[in-house]
Length: 440
Image (cartoon, rainbow, N blue to C red):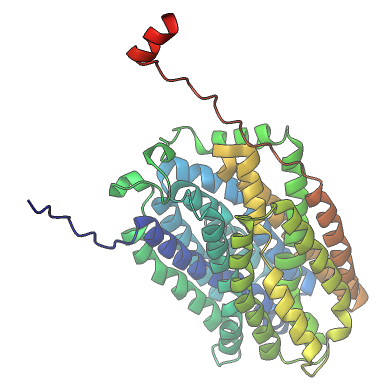
């Protein structure tokens, strides 16, 4: 008798669709992160505001972007990923769109600082931690690298577009409205495709089982976030990770992202050229972050962080002499390296959070990321003050380089948590024959 073997059909696991739409949401929201660095000079020219004043709004934005993250992770546990992300995109679009009507600096702080900061913070790296934690067991490091690259790369790739639009007759207002439209375009996709948990589509996490899709604990978002902080704050690894990520934010989002373009312009480089260089950072950031995720699955994450921070620090020491009106190979080399290193720190940091905090990792990582953005805020404001007081950004670059070396030392000092011991083997019941032999 001939047995018919059912034909297996290839099917894409739904986790990959969720990762894809999350990637698009992060890229759409990233448009807002691209605007401040390009618009510092146009806002100075139109309103007469100082670099410090504009940097204050950027600092508020970055601080809230980070401080919102742990509460956003808790809100996702309470209300679901899709609702939180749709609401965040709408709030961010509203805050950006209303900036075209502002006439005073406090309105810039209110709209770009508070509204956009809260909105984009709800789609920060806590979203990456939540999606990878719920939908993936295998390939977590790789997927976290890809999603992180989506957020970080999107904001940098948008830079030349925003800079070009800002040079048109519509000026910075056209650029602001363009980024609003980019985020709104993602809302229908999120509402349609993003699902909260594998069980919602009758699946299990990729590479896992139904047991890995744990039932969420229904508690208040604020209580969950605060409890996660209080519990984590009792441990040494949390403070080492938070301090290292504070410096990570200061040396990327806080200093390079908003101040690289004005610093280059101070030395005679056209704004569009400087913006294009940051876009190149974004392009290489994709390769660097994905590679970092792949390495995190195979290498001690502490060693990776040691290398990333140390090399970043040395590169910042070399940056000031590279500025000039013309583009040289040495500046291109710096940009390529900084792109590879930009957010390569995220996958190993997230891996260490999972190792030490388990199921609480998304909320705890939200607080670690909050420290990243507080560092960004300090550097964004501090860089503006250094420029206003000294007339140059040189001291800011050197200070950030020294801090990166401190972050390298902090990262390698984190102790690894030993893997849980395998349970002892349970002896099998003896068969009748063996029992008879034993008892003779």
